[in-house]
Length: 97
Figure 1 (tube, helix red, strand yellow):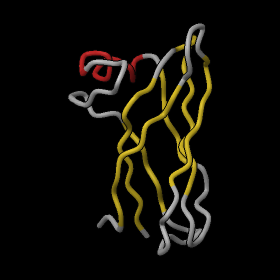
Figure 2 (cartoon, rainbow, N blue to C red):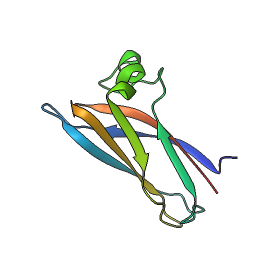
Figure 3 (cartoon, one colour):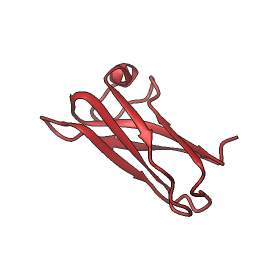
Figure 4 (cartoon, one colour):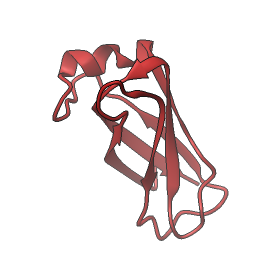
């Protein structure tokens, strides 16, 4: 069962964009160093510069992984694309013990 869930925006930047980016998830006071974290894109989400269709197909071009949690703080989500991407994408995340 999930201990916490949420949303965050990850940003590949303005043109010409980037292949790698990251975003910190903080404020997770009950997370432990051994908690398990996951991040993903929902196909119907959108952001200020990407439509739901963009979100639906973005996983074909990029992947997201979570770093090791910092107890009482949170974790970092890393994004990596096969080529440069631009703009912000809405991500969802979950962690559990």
